Length: 507
Image 1 (cartoon, helix red, strand yellow):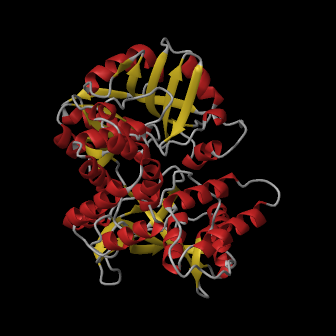
Image 2: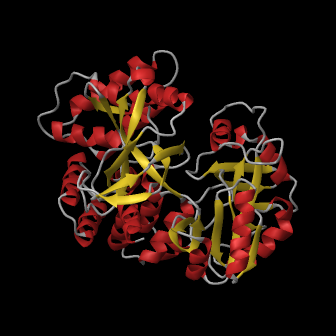
């Protein structure tokens, strides 16, 4: 398949707001792909190449000076091989080597194709061809049930591989995709309610659990082999030996556990979230120890539990890892929910998560079965730009431009971000120093006062609410926004949406 076919598909998908039209367009191009082209094509369409990080940034691309091809000649396989080569570059001389590979690829691409590839490599391809739309397109192209395709994608954690199985295999092959101990799956996510009782009104009888201000972990065990993964499915096993040893000591042979981890102070209270994340970023173990809290069990000794009701999963979790469970109660009584929420807050945690007691574990989805309630409005937004500071902050990137996700393109490009406010409040000297060092790597353009960034960095923002405002395209502005913490464990597609923020107007 020629790369130009994907470029044309991307343009066609971008030009329509109709989900059905997007699905049809994507299905047509998938039907044309050869078996070995399917996974690479899917990665290019969602700006998530199968190679993962390839070490290419805006500055390296901007430094190129090449003449592009006059006619299309690149295939999807050509691009996939070029990305393989870029991903393999490392060590001394890597900058020069990577530059040479980029020059070669750029010279073989037409201007239109190179623009597409740049946006793919920088993660800026805003076609609205996000995973949900592409999953429907895979189902249509393969004539497989949507539910079977979605389940296979969630359990495999690989959209490209799912497309390959659906389009080249049998219905039985697709249905056979299941949990594999050692292969992480997308975590189940929670929606938000204003109060714990409001959350209970949504779920009915529930397991009400502490909402920890920690980092999500998924732990797999097969015998003595233990793997620990982040919410983004990154392997951090070698960085958390204390968690590995705890799980090795549990009375089972095979496990997949879902939970959180954070470090504790000498008084037993949680340390700041940044200290936990600093451990994740350290290649060697540090003095700060991490303690796991588990709240779900997805697999136990050859038995998949994700389709079992939460009540059953918690019974097994208590038997296997009771000492390491997140504190909680099973109740349908509002008074009990309020009591546990107050206890969580008093212990220094964020609030509670209320989970419908008979719900299945739906990997990768945010529904109404799990609902979190925190006393302060906090939202995950994306940094779109940063302004240079003045006075004491001169020389540091300070005031942040904040964006909410716009999945349907109501206020711009589908899958893009819409600005909802600015803030410099809550930025410590440490954070100012960090963002001044890190943000230039994400720079797309600059003015004298402002550095504009790829929408990649997620930051947790506390607000008192929102108000109507014509200043920003989404029609709202944040009230008293302040930085709580950066969330390197979250991807931009996990940020809160403009629709979620607009719901606060009704409140």
